[in-house]
Length: 220
Image (cartoon, rainbow, N blue to C red; front, side):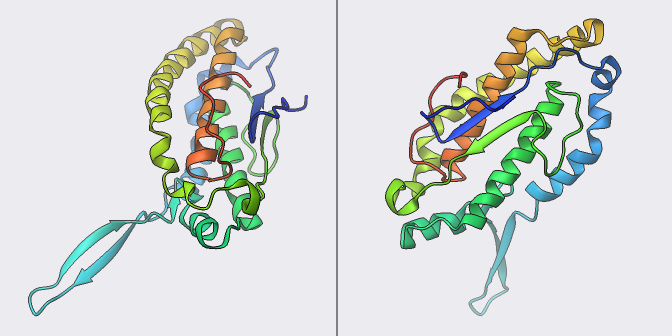
């Protein structure tokens, strides 16, 4: 199955609906996911602070500053500076961010029981995500990246509510799969829509891949 094509937004996301799921793989999902969780953790949780030491003839003091060059493993500050000063988005930086988002999406799909396949580090499998590479000189405003994380605050609020709802949904789905071997389609579509929404906010506010404000919807 090909990913859904959505000309209205730069990011598309879809997961193939499974006709049957393994009961035992679902029952022990968190245990089975530990190796890939460790791997992804090494990518997205590096040292997140930098130290600055100052002294004016007295005992030196140290201030710990947040490292804003990345967010959750995504390159943020380098592309931001390139867009602001050069109106460019180097392709390899973009490809790193997209590759990481794809990996995280496969892991999310696995943790949310959407698929049984163990998340691959490089293959799309049944989780389809695309992000359109922007022509920075024509499509990206020079100054907008500076305020995008703030502009996305309404989405953070909605996503907090959706996150709570998604956790309830996956618990219900867990019982359904262990008993019947099938993922209730309404719950499946809700979880896919939630991940799609979250990915679009990441693409807008942190990957800086588009200036188009993310839509407030679960659908494609």
